[in-house]
Length: 101
Image (cartoon, rainbow, N blue to C red; front, side, top):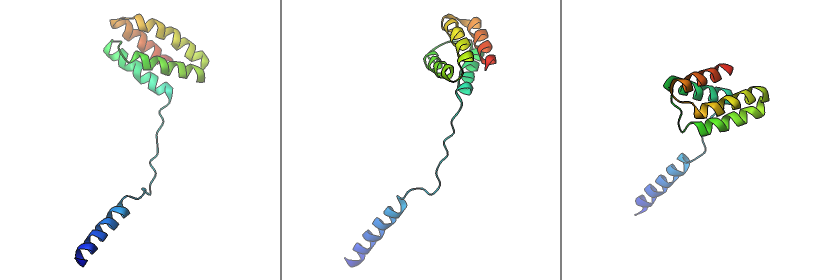
């Protein structure tokens, strides 16, 4: 009985030691908005398809416009056109927008 209690106590101790905080903090990498937008636009340009990615793309462009109003304004105008574009026209417009970044 005594050895069983020792084994249980040792097990609890081992679990408690293993649950501590890690000693090495993980660095979080933040990708710039311009890079995120460019990646989204290049994806549209390569597939010539506009879909559900347009909503987050519009939000990113709005945020980007706060940081860089001049470029952001141009991108917003093109984004409005991109929302109604289809096929190769969408791909060409997305490529043009990506080049502005």
